[in-house]
Length: 301
Image 1 (cartoon, rainbow, N blue to C red):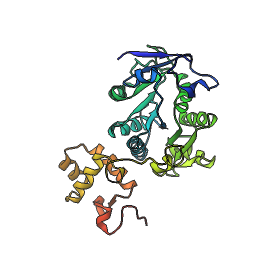
Image 2: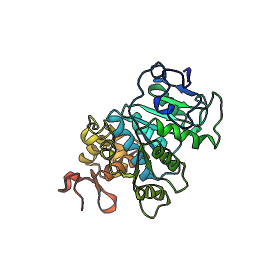
Image 3: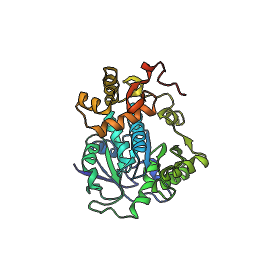
Image 4: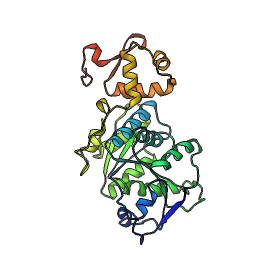
């Protein structure tokens, strides 16, 4: 797949980048969206999701669910293709059949990180991989803080999911504030170091995110959007798990056997369902649909 190079004088160069104090001298695009955008097609409404590389299962599930539900609402999901939260957000958007852009700190022809090579290929098939580094440029540490200004400038808002106080994700949030973008933060356990970044942002006035509606409702032109299609905005894999539980599968192993899926993926989807009040855990880890226990899915203790 060929790369397209844009400079500030080109028609397709993003207007939001022109107004940066230090706009990229060149922007390199690669992927299914590259030709249309480079020819002057409007850059789409987008939201960035960023966070820790060494994310917890909770953080990964939240980022994946947010990525999926933003994509279901027709919003492009922007992230940095790093392992952890970034990869989960990209993956969620792809699972929804949506579009996701990866803003990287190396040449667009460089596979970095190698563990995300397959994910990168999937993004290229329907979305975009872009950055300011020339082809063949390796991933160097100082490239990543600089690429964060591009990531935030292409987005209407930045959502931080798990980050330490020294995380690069807070760099993206600072750029977003300087650029007049909204900053959102997902709260986490108070005992976790990865919660300190989002909690610090919340103390500074960031918007609290408990679900995708908290993001869509705060951004101009997006408040009328809502995730489409599946019950409660759930992904197809989550719907299948609910159906399996309704059919009598009350353990993780039983669900995996019934659906022919691997346990780690089941656990991620179950965490999303628990966070959204769709599934309850009983004695010895048994599982039940919330609606079948006499509680509505949204009811809390």
